[in-house]
Length: 296
Image 1 (cartoon, rainbow, N blue to C red):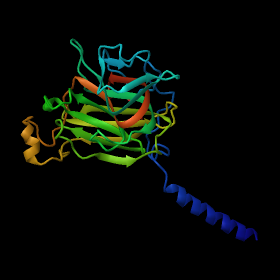
Image 2 (cartoon, rainbow, N blue to C red; image 1 turned 90 degrees about the vertical axis):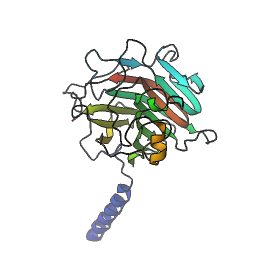
Image 3 (cartoon, helix red, strand yellow; image 1 turned 120 degrees about the vertical axis):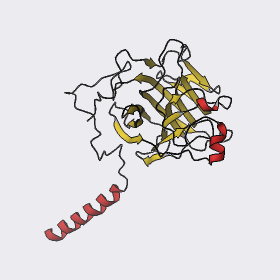
């Protein structure tokens, strides 16, 4: 009987292990050395107490959302006029099919280039798609461009680090508005759905190899505990093409190759959402020193 019990128990263990292995997700069960360095190493914290992946560049530019009144800031603007209300916990709820919260550069300031963008978010619900042409429900932080409109289409370049309501992540590149988008890279489900829970989302971009290539990384605080896990790691070294036909892409006359690498800076960094009602807090953009990561 004892032998039979052991066999049965072992069999059940194997069955359950195989079952649950189907649901292991990187942000919940890191399979690589993406965990934070120990506290014995230098780990920086920003103005809100959020852990930094990379330190701020010496004399580098930093921006932090005004949590008392985000609109009381000449660098900050929100397009498309969404509903915007303060919550009891001090966060802000924003509701519209299309949201673009822009951190602009004013005269005398340095444009955004090598940056770490951070924000905490809680998705309350999905807005049924009606007026928005974007069908995916996402939070996306992006930078390395300027205004995104059809009057000045060539100014709209960006690397876009996306996080979706389903728990999927990925990267897109935009070379002009609106016909210069690439397909998504590193699209992968890394966590469970995000509805009705706080998470942190970081997007990092910086030049490498003598400013000829761009390193793209994103990090998720899946448990709202200031513990960040790297969920994407990508280098744009060419070959990442806009998906429009040549006749459409070059019709914009932006003087860019279809796989243009965006090594330049841009005047605007943007916190974007599509088809969501969500709360946010502790948004920041920092100019970073990428050679001094607190990760290993």
